[in-house]
Amino acid sequence: MIEIEFRNVGKSFIDRQTNQPRAAVTNVNLSIRSGEVVSIIGPSGCGKSTLLNMGAGLYLPTAGEVFVSGEKVTKPVRKVAFMLQKDLLMPWRNIRANVALGLEIDGASQQEQHRIANELLAKCHLKGFEDHYPYQLSGGMRQRAALARTLAVDPQVLLLDEPFSALDAQTKMVLQQDLAKMLFEKRRTALFITHDLVEAIALSDRLLVMSERPGTIIEEIEVNLPHRDNPLERRKLPEIGPLQGRLMELLKVGKEESAELH
Ligand SMILES: Nc1ncnc2c1ncn2[C@@H]1O[C@H](COP(=O)(O)OP(=O)(O)OP(=O)(O)O)[C@@H](O)[C@H]1O
Image (tube, rainbow, N blue to C red):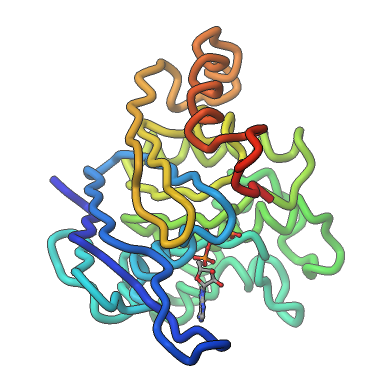
């Protein structure tokens, strides 16, 4: 079953200088099967976040259509969870209450909220920190809590916008491992944005490469490597180097006309 589909999608924003619409993305077609993990990579400003915002129903396309589970997206969709680079934890709620936020909004009993939040915090290696406040945690721990909060409502679809980019390399790899395991075990569908080429290869079934603004998909690459549930193992495979090389070629990394990556 196709879980996420973009059909000829375009999105323009009003350019502040000219006061005219200017395309951010154009003619984007993609379909992601249920249980698939797909990464989008592309130069800075090519419209990756714009695509995710349309998938989440936060922006509406100016051309084409977006579907989640076969239904046209016209507003934020309940079964879709969004995770960003910023953890966006509420400073006045402890970690358990932050994780339980979506459950509270859904009307779950307090007992149920605590049970699910505690369980997820343990899975995300935050057992013992349930009563701590965000300011008492490191950046990596806060991002773990944000991951637990994203998972608490048990979303079918996860849209992840550079969720680990602010973390140090080791913390990042451990979190990728947790995320990959969970996505694999629960057969969740994910669309992932990253500037880290090896991260994209380590986590994904498929890679979509975008052009510069106005962004469109210029290449689709099947990763076709084992260990999608174990990115630490996948990182060790010899095939990683050539795949990374191919992505660097497509993104013109190191070339004179190279698009800025960050
Ligand atoms: N709400 C908005 N209003 C006006 N322009 C916008 C808006 N959101 C995005 N844009 C513009 O659309 C283009 C694409 O932005 P977007 O954030 O989607 O790119 P990106 O590929 O995610 O960038 P990065 O890799 O740097 O995070 C940019 O030029 C940006 O300035």
